[in-house]
Length: 26
Image (cartoon, rainbow, N blue to C red; front, top):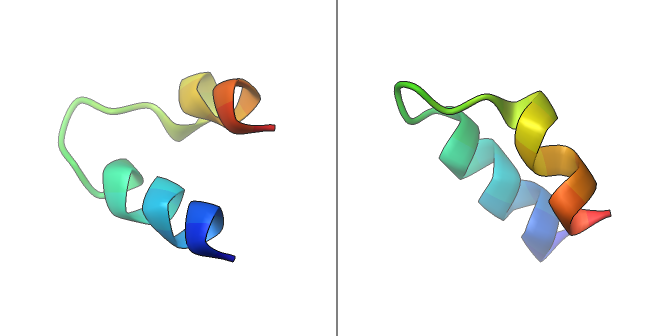
């Protein structure tokens, strides 16, 4: 839950691609 919220917060930053970050957290 906390990690999911963390990822969503990062995803809102410009220039960040969530799909590139997801594998690092899963």
